[in-house]
Each structure stands twice: as structure tokens, then as C-alpha cells.
Length: 264
Image (cartoon, rainbow, N blue to C red; front, side, top):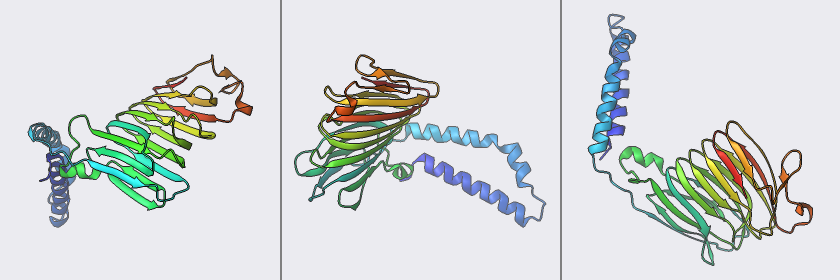
């Protein structure tokens, strides 16, 4: 059963196509452009009706997707998480598993080779009535602590907690939309590169004790807040006093919009 949104936009496309078809077949006797110019408020009326039906129509919540992918001898991993609206939690998987957890509210699991996995919010299903329900998606994803990981996370309007402290994340690429994201960076991964792009978002990065950091970046209208007790200003950014000799360190580059970047 299709939801009101898909039916509404299908009817809009059919109606517009029918008007221009009538224009062509009438040889100019019917002016589709003039008709649309006069009657376009009907589109707003129809949109309002679709919203009313959407609010009254019970939602069908898609089934949760269990996540259990064996490491299968992978020597490294590339994990991509494309998340929508809701709550995302990333932590540590059990021994022997590359990924585990639950994609609450649904999602897709795509594997393109050993250690290469993409988790994606199945937004296309929403147009067919399979919505994640109130509060959006609720994903809990565990990642193997046993292999080096390149991790890319893209979020929408969401609340996100990424506890990477026990993982061997060597690259973190974070794209945060209108969200609040808390990240605990790895404590024993050697060298970790972190790239953050944030729109209307608050991103909080915590560097574990004993890990050195070098931090640089720009903000459009937002502000960067860096703990200067740990990371001193070095002209173009902030850096730990022991950066050059540290066994474990993170190199953070951020680009922000109207939110805030916090590093502690």
C-alpha cells in the first residue's frame, strides 16, 4: 500500500504531463502555461491534503535488520555508513565479527569485497510506505577492533555517538548534517587521520588521554572550541607538545558551517 506522499506526487506528475499533452494535441487552442499560471494554488491545496492524510494514516514500520558479518580473515576494512534521521551508535563488535548490531527501522547492507561494507538508510522504501516510525532510525553498529579500519560516516538530522576508542580506525571521514555528533577517537590505533565536514551541526571530538593531536580547520558562521590546556596554538592550528614523538596521535582537519566544533 503506497503512502499519501507517493500517490500525491504521482498525481502531480500525471496532471502536469496531461496538461502539456493537451497543449500539444490542441494545436494551440489550449495554453498549458496559462492554465498552470492561473490554477497553481491547487498544488498547495493538494499538498495540504496529502499532509493531512499522512498524519492520519497509520505507519508501517519496516522490520529491523540484524547485522552479523564475519571478519573472514580480512586484513583491513573499509566501512561506510550512510545514515538518515534518528539515532546512530557506533562501538566495538564481538571477537571474530567485522560488523555486528542492529539496523533499527531498516536499512541496506552492501558488500563489495572482503572487508568492504556499506550500510545505507533505505530512503527509497519511504516513498512506498515503509517508514522507520516516530523518532526515525535507530542503528547500533559494532566494528571489529582487530583490523585497521577506514570509516566514513554521513548523517542527516540525527543524534550520533561514535565510540571509536577501542578500534583501530586509521581514517575517519565524517559528514554531519543538522545533527549532534559525539566522537571518542581511538586510543591505540597508531596514526589516525580525521576529516570533518559539518553543516548546521555540533560535533564534539574527544581525544583520549595519552593520544597526541594536531588540529586545524575553518568555520563559516560557527565557532571552533579547542581545549588549549592540552593543545597549544601553533599559528595555523592547535597541537600537542609531544606530537612528534607520540606513538598514538590523531590529525584532525575540520570544515564547519553554522554549528560548532569542539575538541577536548
